Image (tube, rainbow, N blue to C red; front, side, top):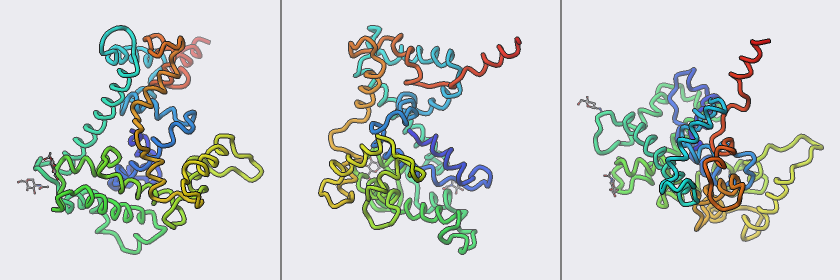
Length: 323
Ligand SMILES: *[C@@H]1O[C@H](CO)[C@@H](O)[C@H](O)[C@H]1NC(C)=O
Ligand SMILES: *[C@@H]1O[C@H](CO)[C@@H](O)[C@H](O)[C@H]1NC(C)=O
């Protein structure tokens, strides 16, 4: 769900819009998605966007642009949709079902869009060659020395080999072509049990800055927090994270997270993200503690659910004009 946000951020970094280079990193950021899942409840103050995207999917971006009044109005319409049994309360089951629906819709839209883009004739399968040409074809025309380590295009080369590897895993029948089911697993491996090992492997590769194949406590912390200036003290929640790493993440106490320990961290057994998110949202907004939400309770906390412009720009400007 963080895809859009991250794609635009990464596009800024890689300058894709300006240079007209295609955007292979659209899928790359999925590992981030997995990490965001894992980290959301560690420090949710820093993750408001997570709540908004879990609740709204792609529409989170639209709401961010709205004035508070309009944001509240549209939220009210959504609340009526979530309240499936029309008893004027949103309970945890209804909220969970909504979050799952949002997630499903987001994935279907994304896969549908990319399927159409890479398979305009709408055949049953996409071959790796066609996909590679569409997404990474521009690499063929480049001077090999521009693809060396350190160059800005080097990252595309490593994305290509990662995609190649992920494609082969998703390609269950080994014909190097993906049908729509397999293509969905390729684009959204975090949704598939079958793809679990490759998700764990890619996550480790992202975090493992010294390439020793395992995650140290510094690498783990580095994913959530930029090292402070000298003399600056680490915030309390980072100290707690260090303890969490030592006491829970690093189960065999060798100072690192290995493959298995990373898997338990990012894909914990028996953990349902939609359910956890529903519980979290209810807990945060339930002012009378009856474990269900009225429309008023939700709208009261609209910034938790949908967000909007922090200040009411339109209104501020109008008032200013009156002076
Ligand atoms: C789609 O069909 C057209 C016409 O049959 C063909 O020329 C083209 O190569 C096909 N495109 C792909 C990607 O297979
Ligand atoms: C794609 O192929 C897999 C087997 O690799 C099969 O289980 C699945 O039903 C197929 N999906 C579609 C949409 O044909």
